Length: 152
Ligand SMILES: [Cu+2]
Image 1 (cartoon, rainbow, N blue to C red):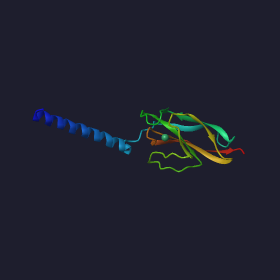
Image 2 (cartoon, rainbow, N blue to C red; image 1 turned 90 degrees about the horizontal axis):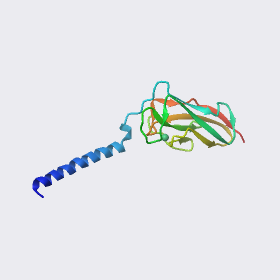
Image 3 (cartoon, rainbow, N blue to C red; image 1 turned 60 degrees about the vertical axis):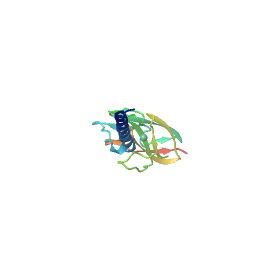
Image 4 (cartoon, rainbow, N blue to C red; image 1 turned 120 degrees about the vertical axis):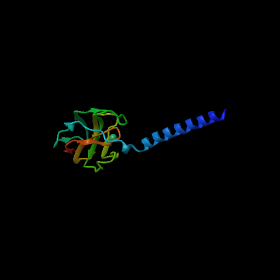
């Protein structure tokens, strides 16, 4: 290999590795990506159960959405996202990706309903819609909170 060839090869390797490291830093800093916009009139709501209803221990919750579409978590597409269910007012930071817990459930496969099982008594439910990175849209799409009573 001539000296020029060696230098060229080295330069190509350098360029390639700097492109790769730029890609890497993009991946490790998703917060650098701007939040996804929600269209005017976008709305998340709980279709079922209705506010104030009494339900069985195991019951179906159906998620409603207006002016937007469902995409699985990780899939970036404008005007889409996936549902999250907030049970009993679980707290979360509106500026960060939503955490995952027993009272903050992600429906990242794109589900539009879920069977819940809750302890008897009063509970609240609220839907939060979020983007491919589990972040709220701009402006946020959050349903009204409903209160239900779970039977003994
Ligand atoms: Cu999520």
